[in-house]
Amino acid sequence: MSDRKQVVLATRNQGKVKEFNKLFAELGWEGISLANFDGVPEVVEDGDTFEANAIKKAITISTYLGIPAVGDDSGLEVDALQGRPGVYSARYAGEDATDEENWRKLLQELSSVPDEERTARFRCTLAFVEPGRDPVITTGACEGVIAHESAGTNGFGYDPVFYLPEQGKMMAQLSPDEKNQISHRAQAMRNLLEAIKVEG
Figure (cartoon, rainbow, N blue to C red):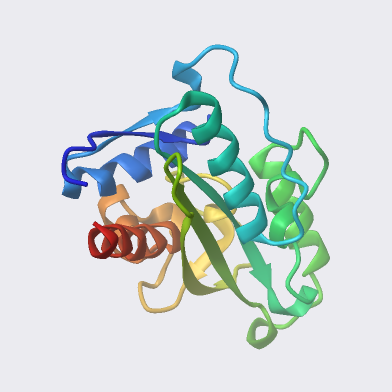
């Protein structure tokens, strides 16, 4: 598969596109955002798992464009909230909620939860689909703790309130290169690259 240089990323989230491309560079690939194509159908993320949504996005986009696609679904799982917001992470505070509105709702819900019970993880599932072949699916996770207030301006989503004990920082305080060493998306991507190499 070394001749495959371009892969469509089934997302218009430029933050995700940047992260993917830093990792794709290891293979000499280029990830292309959906924003580069006209008329691509919107994919309704109505699955009840990250895997279901990732596969649906990748298959829909790959089938429509006729080229390989990577679909991802990722989110935050908070133990004190029985795994919420989960698949609803991007719209936790409403369909058109901003990142800040989402994490502020989360902090409000956890306001009375003590530090030792604020454990959480970012989880990412990736699905690589090329026409005529079964999806290749991988996952990654990054463990942390939900802080009491935000810090940092890097990243997106819940990064400003996701504290990494080993780094002593919020996810949003890491540089892009630091984040790509430990993030859930980076782990899932590395697993995907290995799986694709094995499949040939």
